[in-house]
Image (cartoon, chains in turn yellow, cyan):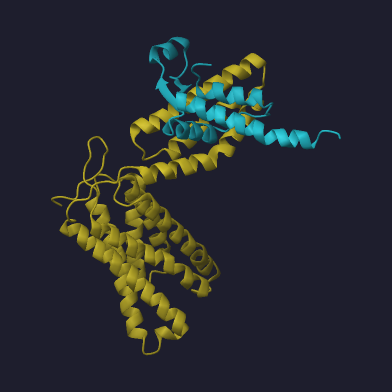
Length: 272
Length: 93
């Protein structure tokens, strides 16, 4: 890789790991790395190094420094001033929080019943309970996702908006047994959670855990649909972290969403 | 060296230690920030006009504080103390 491409990659990496940080901190790190890249290029030009040799060294400096970059980002995230929460969340946020908890709890309960009774959970005395839990979870997922879209429509980016819409459709697919369309739920909710973390509604850690839960669920789920094997033990077990993360999101919404801070782009929970 | 920017520090370390590569970006700037937070360094942003005149990005300059100098001396002494017995041990008897 030549040096301009390596430098562009490094700039993109800096943009990525500083995303969501205060603008001054972000621009300081970006400018410092930019100056470093400039000096490095100047030195290479003076010593007669080739563009590919310089590019390779830049890439190695990027790769070896990535763990430090990530730990630096996390340290800043943890030390950052906690957003001030309002005295209490608004009614709409409470409702969304309750629905998220309901969705996560219903899915967890359904999965536990399936783990205990296997496929007979759908035919034995627990059949009505399973049906209630499935339809209830699906509708609760859909309402929460569409509700979050409506609630934060002015702040969400396209990714979050599409994620919320997909998650809502995936929730409806669960309620009406929409087969593969249920895949939309974990894919969409991971994108939505990520964007909600960007605007400060969820913590970055919670968004990461939710995304990891979604990926862990998706892998066996996609395998089950591709092989037409039905939900196996691994799919059921891996659904639990995902559903628990919905409960955590609901609890977080109950605590309220951040108040506005000057120039920070944070949100208010008042009057909605 | 009174003031130095990140790349110059990395280059000095590479040359002093005969290393093959410069310190990685993440390692270097994270360390500099920690040293500044600990009071061993202070930094300032260079006048942006200087960078603009030379056609390069703005530059952050670091300077070692008195606390930093003290820490550096202690670290150097500790290193000498640690290497002296080792040097004695490998002397031919």
